[in-house]
Amino acid sequence: MENQREELVNNEFLETTFRPKEWVIQKIESMIETLLFDIANKRPPVINSVSNKKRKEYHSRYDSKSGILRRKNNDLSNKQIRFLSPKTSKTFAIMIRILDICHELLVQNATATKRDIYYKDVKLFGNPQTVDLIIDELACLFRIPRSCLNVIASSKGLVAGSLKLFQNDRIVLDCLPTNDQATFRYLLSSRMYKQLGPCILITGKGYPDIATRQLVKKLGDLRRPYETYPFLQILGFFDNDPYGIEILCVYKFGSSAKSFDNENLATPSIKWLGLRYSDRKKIPRSSLIRITTADRKKAYHLLQRDYLQVKWRVEICRMLYIGYKAEIQSLCDEENGNLLKYLKSKMRLLVTPLH
Image 1 (cartoon, rainbow, N blue to C red):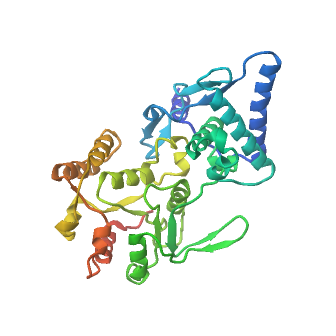
Image 2 (cartoon, rainbow, N blue to C red):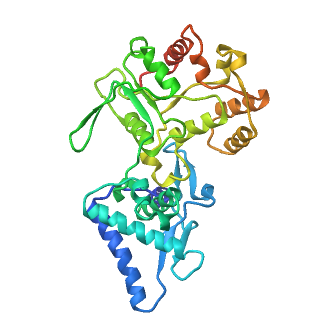
Image 3 (tube, helix red, strand yellow):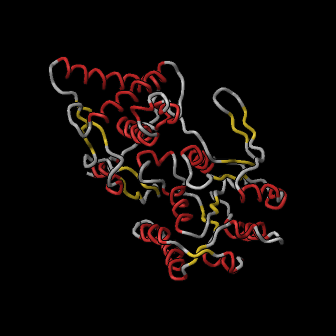
């Protein structure tokens, strides 16, 4: 009875598994063969797929055990893409075309970004978002990460610091300082490494892309058993506004759209460094910005999430009550090095050994 209960819990959420390319090729070919068999037997071809688009809140749920948003393992979001249906015939053609492209990539052992795929058939796809949606659906359908389709993420994020990346082709990437993004550039030019010690600075340049989230996740999982700090401390520094908290949630819990693969994207161990409401006394009042209607709408949406910590809810409610938000860039405007002082004081409070 206990084993049955444990199996039921384990099957509550969909799990993705890294598969070899031969497995994925066989899966695609088997899918196409089924469609051809239906056509040969004069049956309208139908693709049984999953939906990631509408009502995403019904697709995913917070998993308290792992601390992330995960895709539910149920049939509520399954859908059929029919070739003869006026509503889904174009989607049918797009999915077949993307299956064809992914199959070609796998056979040739090549990779492509979603934008590369989009430009292979601009007229059919219409926009890159359509390609992104279908790739997610296929990955979710096959229960594999997107990378198993040989579709890679084109990164817009930046990284600098005490880090070297070793690629599969043995090329070593040294993460040296780079000039972009105001706060990122400010911290690098302030010689933060001498004041804060060895560290890695990462920015997603707003809402983080898949590649940036994957990097943060890998760093968070990295274990160094013989070091004082066996795990790297992942600290999040965001604007004190609803969108800043939303970005923090994406790093920590994952997103609803990628809930089927959040185990490879979310970093539950991330700690919120700031900015917080209590930090506003360090910011000139003239630098505070009145919140907009869009900010309020985002804030109300965040408050509806049952997994949001009480302290985070208090931050949002205070923001709504006061009616102002604060950006981290405002700390860079101070000539006395306010930002570095702030980071040093916050890090002393948050950075503790994890065993």
